[in-house]
Image (cartoon, rainbow, N blue to C red; front, side, top):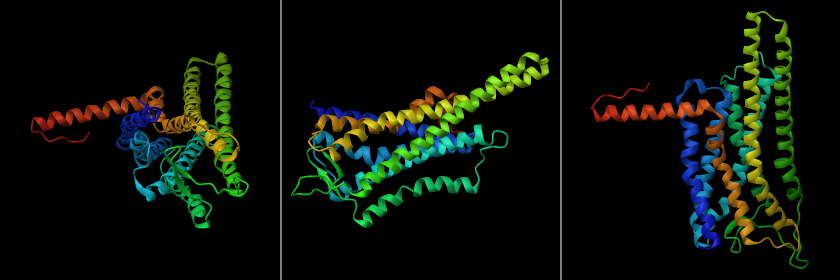
Length: 326
């Protein structure tokens, strides 16, 4: 089996794991009322973003990479990199939003934050889905973006303007401005929020443990509850950090490869490196369900409960009994 076919097999595995995996994140959050709070709705929205990335981009890559030729026409070739960019920005905004939500809960308003879904928070989630449209639309209307099929890499990608006389890449202002606004700034914000969360939760735990020594039993029980609550907060901060780290591990090799290929003259990036790093980037779409299944017991329990419901319903239908939702 040639290298492109091996990569195509990995992309197919992503669909097999990622499509049901992300649905198993979304559906329990919809069904379980206890998950109808901001942090879980954001996780469900992030899972929907990963699900759509697999459907709208990854699924089209499988057969094309396997046959080493783009099979879906010029229109889809034009849309594919646009959609990839949209879902990258969408994911980054989700990560910022998840981090900020935990920051408010742990650092800014630990005593008053309840996470209930309000109209303002619904509008906030809607903006996460709307904002990534803006830079893509501006680039298209201003003529900054051009997308072409690259037969050497078996993908449709952004076509960078070439100066045919000098053979150098024309680096427009957007080429430099975009990495700053879409990579550096958001991840500096995420880093600040998560470091603040972890430090605050750890500091509160240490302060409470110091106070426990001179307390009576009733007060000790109360302080132990506070410690458990802060431990939960710290675990939440670690969970968010793991989710962000997994995305960065998947994204950075792809970004480095693209940067070298587009902006560093005299460096020929081999097909294997480009296909491999792009394949690793799509791995990010299946990381979160795996992380949730390992780190979040409430998700495992919710999924088990959902499957028990399905089994009860199936048994009821087989016995000609009306199945009612629990």
